[in-house]
Length: 73
Image 1 (cartoon, one colour):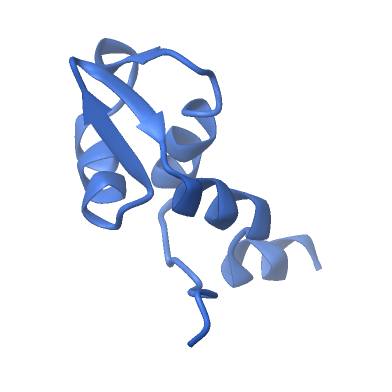
Image 2: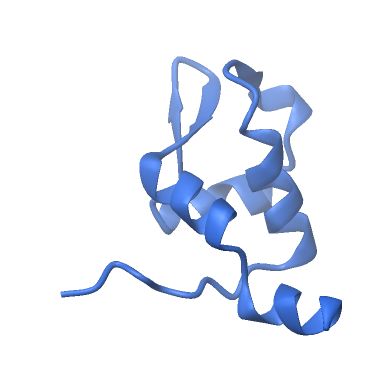
């Protein structure tokens, strides 16, 4: 079974996911709805008021989005 899923994230959600590359990211610096959506998709996690990217989130960020690739082309 393949893990390759293209996430149709908004620009705000992509920016929030990218901001989670920083090891310790306080929730006050992130946008609530976008972060909630990323957590629901399993791309981010929240623990003790600190948000972090999951391995699944890293893979999605590296892979990018088909929609983003279309914008570049």
